[in-house]
Structure formats: structure tokens, C-alpha cells
Image (tube, rainbow, N blue to C red; front, side, top):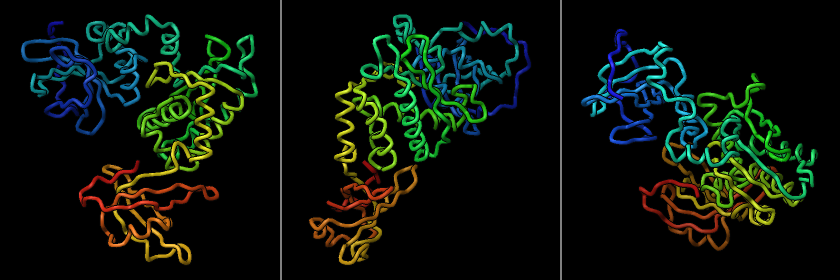
Length: 398
């Protein structure tokens, strides 16, 4: 669309800064069509192209959050829904990103000019997927955080899920979700389960605020982003055949998460259930057979899922000459990942690794392999391998 004259007075006071630098380009064709950027206060802003002129692009923009951007990318919300927030702005941006003119937008009659019709998604590929999959379309409209379908023993011949299994699954999943929230510093809002209209054994999972339990997934801002991140980890741990490294690391690092996950998988395994899952972040259907559920549970029980080892790179700040127990040499390694909180690992040293510590001085950067072992309500670490790393080696936990 070509530029049009805007009669309203320009709004000189805004928080966009002199130059707009995209954070995430969601769609482009010759010019940026839909993207995000941060204003001078660090607030995430969503911008959508509504007109193009000589050397300038016109965008409608509003504040947004990572949850809304995620829903746009997955086709779970339309561009119109993502933009219908106040205040709305019109921004003219030069080809080099400089902000030329801005207006506050308050005219409802001009909305069709600047915002796509309802149902228009980020790109045609997402629209084709929604049109070709009625179940996916229902899920998108539901507003649910996740959609789980059970098969096997908990579902009878009338496609009805056993009420006892339903309740136990909710309790176990919510406890696991709470443990994940604790370690991500996310506020634990309760999971709420509800039967879908699609069938009696398909379950919608939503996240509800304690203060507004009737409004599902109304957890906004940074709290909402963290809640969604924790929920995605939950569903990945339960249903993904191959999990992202970030989810695997949470299970490996934290005994409570591993214990809670074991409870969920033990329940599903005992009922010989199979699971299919959609989430808003990744709505592609993912299935985990009862056989794979049993294998995952066995791995947790035997190895501490999926291994009972951590590989870390950090600074050796103490240990060996210090004694955790009489005659047992110890170690103390501090890991400082970039832009993350530091983590200390302490424990004993396996007899086979004692000689490997000879000659390694305190404050040196090392790469070490730790064995994870359950201990009461927590876990302990035993160093089984260690070697020097370059002083500038990145601190990591794997």
C-alpha cells in the first residue's frame, strides 16, 4: 500500500529512539514486513508494515512480549490480534532505520487500513497448515497452552479417559511444572486441565493466575514469558522423543525435577499409555509411545536421566586438600556462564581422578566430568575426570 496523508498532528514525544534496530525479523519481502525491536526503555515492540513510499516504510506498532511473538511464529495468533493493543503507533522509518515521523493512533475507522483482517497469519505457510488441519485450527482458537491426547489403558472403548488417571496425571504434571518454575525463577501458577470438545480423552492444559482463575493463561509480561518457558520444558520432558539440550540439562542438574518427572512417567508407564502433545510454541503433533515412556522411566531410575553425569567448564576455586570426609579429597568448581548466574559444584573425588588433579592449581580453568548421585532429598557430585582448559574457555554446563 502507498503512503497516505495523516491529518493528525505528529507526536514528537515517543520512546522509539532515533534509529530502530530489529531484534527478530518475522517476515520480509524487499522491506521488513513484520519484526520486533526494543525502545529506549528496553520494552519489546512489534511492528507491522502497512505502507511503503520512496525511501520510507510505514509501520503500525505496539508494545508486545515474547509470548505473543512466539504465538505469531507458530500460527497460534493472527497479526491483527497481536497488534490490537493500546497505545498503537504509526511510525515512518527510513531505509537506514532512522525514525522520521510518529503518530499516536486512536481512530477506529482507519483500523482496516493499517491492520490485516482477522485470521491473517504471519505467512502463507502457517495459514495453509491451519486450513489443512482442523484439529490444529481448533487448538489455535482454544487459547490453551497445551493439548494432550492419551491412548492405551487409561482410555476405554468409548474413548473416555479414566477419571482416576486424569486426576493423578494433573497432580503429577503440576508438581513437575512447579519444580521447573522454581529453578527458572518463574512464578508457579496452577495448571488447569479441561476436556476439549474434540473428544473425551483429549485434554487442554492452561496456565491460570491465582488472582484470576477464570481467565486462562492470563499471565502477562516477564512472568508470562517465564511461565511459557517452564511449560514448554514440561511438555518436552514428557513427550519429546529427542529433547532440546536446555530441557535435558534441567533434568540432569536438579534432583527434584528428575524425581517429579519420574513420577509422571511412572504413572503413564503403569497404565501403558501413549501420549500425543501440542504446545503453542511448537504445535506440531509429537507422539511418545508407551514403549518409549517405559524406556525413559528406566533411564531415570538407573542412570539419573538421561545420564548420571555432568560435564562442566569452570574455575577450580578449592578442594582436594580440603576434606569433606576424613581421607576423602574434595573439589570445588565455580561455573560462570555468560549472562547467567554462577553455580558452584562441590563434592568428593573418585580415586581414579585423584592423580589427574596433581599439578592443577587453584584458580585455573578446568573441564571436569561429575557423576550425579542421589542423596536424601538432593544430590551429590563425585569428580571422575578433570583436565586443564584454556584460561579464556567459555564456562558451560552440559
